[in-house]
Length: 319
Image (tube, rainbow, N blue to C red):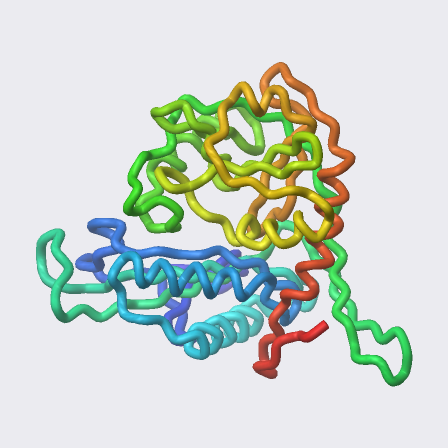
């Protein structure tokens, strides 16, 4: 039970009502039977909503859930943010992390999916550890307004490979399902080394991802990222970067990637829905430039403004 005088750092809601527990029979608890996405919200703008909504809908199809309704998802996010803002009673925080988790809910015993099940959508809201400054500008009086987002500058990372391998499961590859034990173990390795991220390979020796990010290498104006047909999670930022890369004059490739290729790359970076583009300064004993990566970071920040979705008035920002 939360103490009445302690301001909560995160609250989970179902249909706008705060909860502190789920039923012991919930299949998310027993089997990890569900999926989720983690969203950055700046002021009243959901960033990269189209990719997050795509992820949730595709996950529902692949895991044999009922179809999700986008308007209901937006309504639940809006309700949760409104309640959270009221409960924290703070005007200083305007950047939030919203986790949308869909569980198959409570049904009969055993692994098999019951013919009648009632999925549950949980929305967890917490304060982001940084602030994205939001502004609305108009170039000329008769021109439409444009959204401007000012993100914190990215910090170049030093990373190493994790001993924990990324699981191989072609039927689940790409989905951000609730069975994330490989990431749990790998992330614990990263924490013990006091690093910010770590690189994960699978049992075939393929480079897959970071513990909570997708990985990219730049080589001769080609942007290369591992294909995720056997392992890994297709990130929402990764999904949008293919179009962005091509618009910036990079060739785009999704294919098998080896660790040796990473050591011979011109530049290396990670992507994450909350942290955005994260340049890699050093992987083990290999150092990298960050010039082009920082340009991609700036382009992604601009793209975020174009993709932002405005809550509370149910209108997408069109730039």
